[in-house]
Image 1 (tube, rainbow, N blue to C red):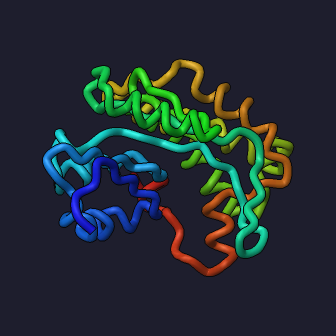
Image 2: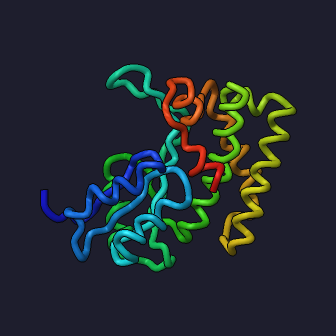
Image 3: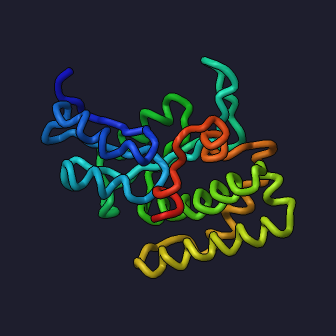
Length: 209
């Protein structure tokens, strides 16, 4: 298919390595590759394959459920971030943001994409893992004192790991991630949806990391 200006990897995190190998013939000197995935290791994998010139940081907030073929039900806010890994300003990330915004998708330019990726991991590690263990939806986890306390402790642990790696994660990340989740009424996390369907779950990418 030739060389592309932009390539977005949107697979499960355990397919990132395979995805990089599959696009190698489509990557040119100025191709920008972004990972709209879960986890904080995908950019490292892309960097290893293609280097810093071709790699940008990205993330997406999507709470959704496949109701039936061709019908997706969305819960709450849906949007994302895109940014250079070195925090520099660039025309390419602004262009990506502008294209998404023109389509009605709230993708903003990030001031610190690594911090934003870890902020999202705080949510993913806690809610996804607890949902699979308990079988509970997001609102059910929040309404139970035992699971809510477990949720907070996992979030605090992820925050501590981020700070130990000098990631500029937002100081209120635990409160922020809990407060924004009250909108997800009846929502099953992506990991719980995969687990119930017998699919492989992103355990290593979201918890093992």
